[in-house]
Length: 349
Image (cartoon, rainbow, N blue to C red; front, side):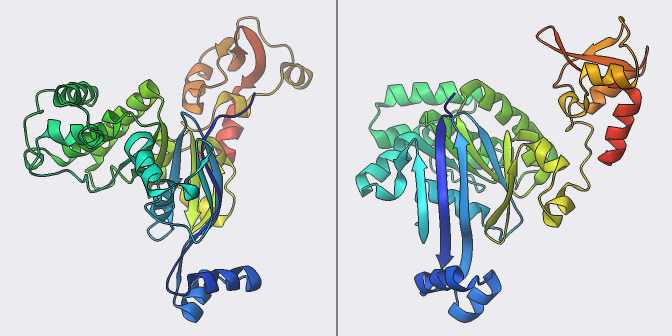
């Protein structure tokens, strides 16, 4: 089956400075690093040869520390920044080839962005803030207010339509920002650290709400964060950046189990693996199990390939300590208590 690619980033470079082209040529010719580029050309490498694809409906997290290039990277998708080199395709269309009019169309209809600082208009009510993208399109007042009220219900802000931004908490303001992006019914959401300024409890609540909305609306989302726990919690896949480069891309499980280098390994070292490792990663084929251990008991408890270690441990406490892993009624593997313990020890859960 062909993959349906919503965002395709190919070899994107962003070098800031008056001598950017000269600096990039030297990078290619001499293999210069970020410090050498700054010293020789007084230029800063913001993004270095970024290449990845995001499938339609995917929630793709880009994670990195301050200065890693993650926020610079996301601003290339809707051309808030122009790359020094490379190509960006949205739905197969080369964004770099768009005219000013076509670019406005992209931003008004196909791609919406949610910023960390909310970006709400203080003189507008909540309803008017949410309806603003539709107003820019020329949608009539009754229709845009109807749509604003619908999405405000989605983000649980019914009853706050006529309030102003300063009357809302930070978490509520961020929900207004999310509602405004959704109201325009874009194909793609770009979210630049939308929850990072919020208190931990409010942040978790918004993460939960956003994940529920994401499942319901099936919007392609590029989500920027400096928090690996947040990326692991919400992302289908994660790209980790350092010094402008994407150093690893994978599912949360792949990132945790197989860090690409010491930099990624340091990030994942403190994360509990109990909820991030699943039965399909630790099970063995039934024939192998029977050859090494003996027959699987008829009354062995059943597990599913997507059950995590924490759930599997609970199932293993009683009975034989042997689990038959089934998918669609068919046995796909076997797990026993010693194998489960070894998996936990191996991954320092």
